[in-house]
Length: 258
Image (cartoon, rainbow, N blue to C red):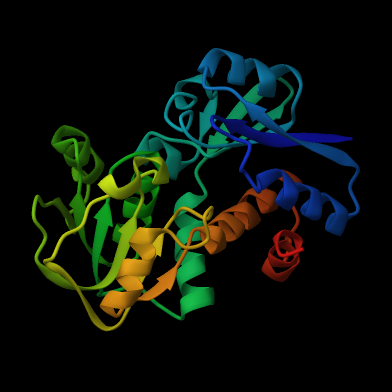
């Protein structure tokens, strides 16, 4: 019997257990999926090590739990964050599937390939670093706006096609907001960020479905996407790893639309 879940704080809004139950059902597996509200790396480590085979990891633990992993994939090692844990025979393995899910969401839901595009990323936390890594690997030209310049510099230092900017002035093909919604109207606005033809704006928040920031990007001429497609596509990559089987995106979209 599988014991899976999501760990972080706050966690009550998370759709991850819904997706996990849908995956278990689709694959014909018995199991439970829990939402575990913890912000302590020690307690979260104990949860996966002693009582769960696999956990999705969200804020504020993506970076904190990295050091607790016995094995890491290349992406997690590069960005210094994990969003997925798997515990087998006492060995904890960590991966990051956020970047893969982000690119899949753009390709599958918005028909956008990022190779050769100009992209502005707002923020430099764990999710932002995964997105920056994926964008750079896919050949985008990336401009990062970070409230903490030191953190932003660390997020881009290994990439030739990314840099930190204070006041971006760019007609971009994609703008991505990774700053938590709880910051409300303090989320940044930059008059110099304008849309090219067919440009997309993504807010990685999925609750609410449309934030004020995203509504303003729509009014500005961007096509818009919230964080739900990214959540679903990164979960597909998690499930492929955890269960060694594929779960179609439409099964997961259906699970959260009922």
